[in-house]
Image (cartoon, rainbow over all chains, first blue to last red; front, side):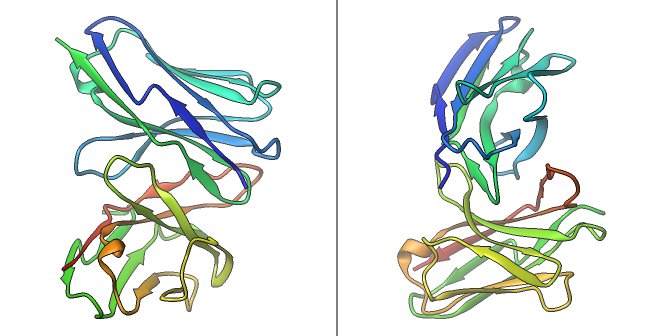
Length: 109
Length: 115
C-alpha cells in the first residue's frame, strides 16, 4: 500500500515569513494530493490540492508543488499570519486516502 | 448546514459495550469514507463506500468493526465489544467521485472514550 511521510513534525516561523512542509509518497499510482488544515478540536479542512498532471498550483498565499519523478510534494505558505497556526496534513490518493502524520505550524506574532 | 454531519459528537462507553455512529454526507456525494484519528496523528483510513457498495476496508480493521450504507445516503459505523484502544476521534468524509480525483469534505467527528 501507499506510505506517506511528512516533515517537519513541528515548525515555528515569524509572522510574515514563509513556511514549507514536505511530503513523500511511495505508490506511483497515486494521482491526487490534497492538503488539509486542522485547528484544535475541529475537522480537517481542505485548503489546496494538486492532481498528478500538474506540477504546481497556487491560491493566494498558498501553493503546492508536485514532483512525480521523485514522488514528493510540498506546501508553501507565504506571508504567514497568526491564524495560519494549525496542524497541516498531506495526503495521497490511489484507491484510498493515506495521510501524513501532520505538521504543527506555529506563527509567532 | 449543508456539510457533512455526524452523530453523536461525543460518546463515552464502558469496555465491552457496543456503539454505533452515524454520518450524513453532503447530499449529492456518492462516496463516503470513515477514518479514525488519534492525538498527534493523521486520519487513518477505515473503509469507504461508493453509493451503497463497500468498496474497500482497511486490513487494520478488526472484525469488531462494521459499517453500512444501506440506501447510499447516510452511513453507520458500529464497534462491538469496545476496547480502550478504540478510544479515538472517528471522522466521516464524503466526496463526489468524478474523473481522477475526489475532493473530500470531513464531518466534525465523533469522539469515542472507552472507560
